[in-house]
Amino acid sequence: MSAEPAGAADPARTGSAGATGATGAAGAGPAPGRAGPKRRAVAPASRTRQPTEVRRRLILEAAVPLVNEHGARRVGLRDIARAAGVSVGTVTYHFGGVREIIGEAVAMEIDGYYGPLGERMLSAPSAAEGVEVLVEGVFTAETDRHWRLWFDSWAAEDGQGPDERQSRRYREWSARVAELIRRGTAAGEFACEDVEETATRFNALVDGLALRRLRGAPPLSNAQARAHVRRFLAAELGLPAPD
Image (cartoon, rainbow, N blue to C red; front, side, top):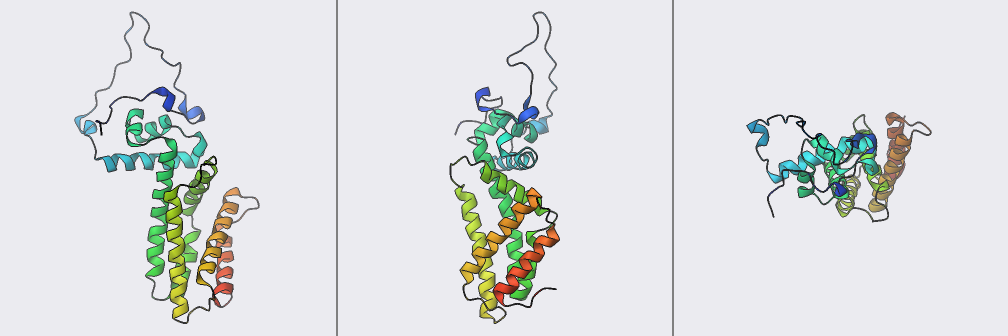
C-alpha cells in the first residue's frame, strides 16, 4: 500500500453536505502580485502519523454525528474530513467512499450498543432479570442516536442491498436474544414454544417502535415503548402481566 497522502484528493470524489460543504469559488487563487493567506505552522505532535486503525476510527467517529445531523445522503467526503481534522486525501486513503464509511460507522455503533447490552443481559443472575435488563436497554435517552443512524443508513442504500457487516451483527444480536429466552425456558422461568420465532418477533417489534419514536407521529416516549415491549414479552414468555 502506498504512503498516506498529505494533500486533498480529486475534488470530483468529495461530495458535501448541503450548506456545510460550501468553500467558495473552485480553483480561485490569490490575485497577481498579492500574497496568499499565511499557513499556520503545524506543531510537531500534530504531524505525527497515527496507526492506521486509530486514524480509521477517528474518521468513523467523526462521521456518526454528521449522519445524525444531516442524514446519510447529505454527508460528503469533504464534510467527514473537516470533522475529523484530516485531509480528504487521508479519508480516501483509508476508505473507498462515503458508503463504506457510513457502513463501517453503523457497524461500529451497533457493536458499541448491542455488545455491552448483550453482556449485561446474559450475565444477569436469572433469565427473568436478563429480560428486564433487555427491556430497559432498548429504549433510553442514549439510544435515539443509534436508531437514527441505523434507519438513515438503510434509507440511503439506493437498492444496493443491506451492508453485510450490519446484517451479520443483526443476526448475532437476534441469536443473543434467543439465547436468553432459551436459557429461561430451560430453567422453567419462561413458557416459550418457539424461541427463534419469539426472538424474531421481539426484534421486529423493537424496530417498529424505534421507527415510530423517531418519526414522532404519533408521539411515542421511551417509557411507552418499553411498556409495549414488556407486554409483548409477558404474553410470549408466560410472565405475569405488567402493571
